[in-house]
Image 1 (cartoon, helix red, strand yellow):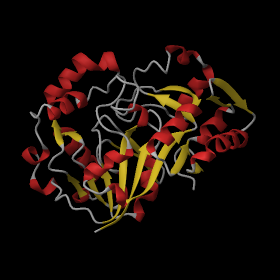
Image 2 (tube, helix red, strand yellow):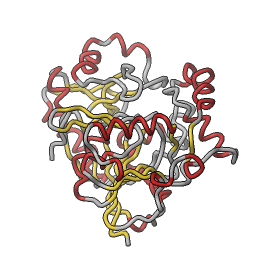
Image 3 (cartoon, rainbow, N blue to C red):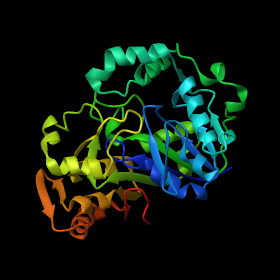
Length: 328
């Protein structure tokens, strides 16, 4: 029997630090589950100052929790097995990781099509995600139960306290994002119900943002001129804004408070976590845009006060956090 479900998801364009939050609270749950996307996503987690990266395995693996890759996910067999091997060599118990029999398999042909037709045009990671989801919808895809050994297949029964860990974010959602510069799956928190639980089981919707905005890949909301701003480039360096999957440099812009307000309202966020506040302290510059006006503040406290006043009416509990660690 499921006691309750909490869902972590991104409120911006991805790379908000969802994995850090998941790792920080995973000890309180029985299962940690991934419901969307594939190896196009990446979570970076620090444990005792050592950095670990995952791409499809939920961060519950770092806290010895049962981990599920859900039916809405896609995976490449070789990359998945390599990730398990990496985690096992690092001392983690990979027997805890299971894959839904209905998750779809990325083939080398999917990757080739992505690299040749989509990567340059849309800024994809080139991991074969869109072609795999396309085959899924065409009813010609391969599923995990046809390919993976039975010891890796999940029996599709959840119980106890469940933490769901999203990939990508609201503005990359296939339905609500900046189409066509979006991902190929549902990033909204209700997509987690594809794991097989009722929406009535949801207790908290934990939306994650950063104190500034970033974007990997092509998007007209992030013009090329942003590369010319010295302070924004300093934020890239201090915040280590490089993709976990591709290693490419992320474009940075000042926090768009209107877009954050919209994503909170659209997704029903109950708990808002704003990450990387210490990065702005490093560059000693505190700016955001609101109602198409760029505001600048004397310090972080003044900026946080402004944010609290503008977001308070939404009813979400707001927590501010640092770079590597989740500051409660």
